[in-house]
Image 1 (spheres, rainbow, N blue to C red):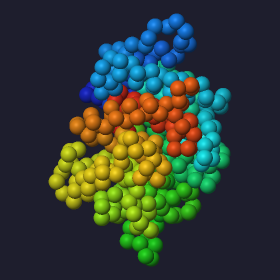
Image 2: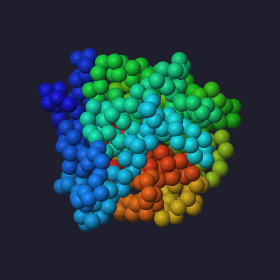
Image 3: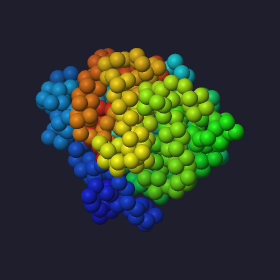
Image 4: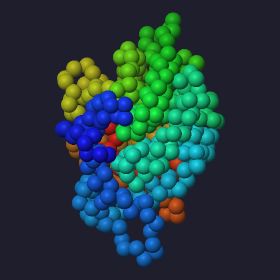
Length: 408
């Protein structure tokens, strides 16, 4: 990015687009600094590794939490390196990932998560060793969006649960928006996100005769139902769009936040659906923490003001701490280990302090032990290796602070 087009100020970057408009984008660290860090940390990923290559050594900008010792840091960076290489190697010519697991194929979800994994290391559509991969993924998601005139973003084979692809695609495109990507892509992304936000808003669940609260989402946009996992995906995507400067109806976010509050059970966790009010689900509860933080609702420990909302989030955090363990595999998490820790890692990173410092080394060691020694991939939750590898590398790279949706 040219120096005369970037102004750094207290963690904000003002980006002048090709249209001449200037807007502010909040990032955890300046993109210019990210490019410098990439040259130290990740640039070797873009080159083939010789059999006689010297051991990879971390640079001075590697966050200490990635490893208490130089050896631990090097192990973490090697795991990230191998995971990102696997994703780059398995990207299809059209920019997508079409990995099939036990739940079928979800190319929009996989492509968006993989794109975010590259961005978590500092690559953007314009800079970094994986700029080309991010750009190809971005173009693929745009094409998927433009194939649906109603604003839905979901790839082939995901019709039965299309709102997952829709949410993750919005999240990814919102992170791409604001980069110096040229007027054509800037316009296309803005149009895609405007239509996507409108679809999300109109597909939000309505109040039924037996319900006091609605405002969630379910698997398809026309079902008008709701459940927790789709709701947190849409809420986080809407927040990312709003952060990027896309107009999002405040009422839509407020109703979604109220829905999650209503789903809180007596033990502090979040249930599957407001319609069923069954037992709390650890995975959805972990995701709800990240969503509340993204919506500006905190417990006192994370900076919230004493009151009903802060107590509600505190109870939720306590529930998750008791029910979600790093070394427990899928036990107690309904088989969604990677999904659970994607959101829990985001929540604890935003939370900071002792919780994050205690959590990251544990999840890092656990993930390093789960990595495939042959190809560097992770098979996540039986969904597939693209899904698992993308989530694992996102978690491992959170200390860099490059994803705007995860802020402190």
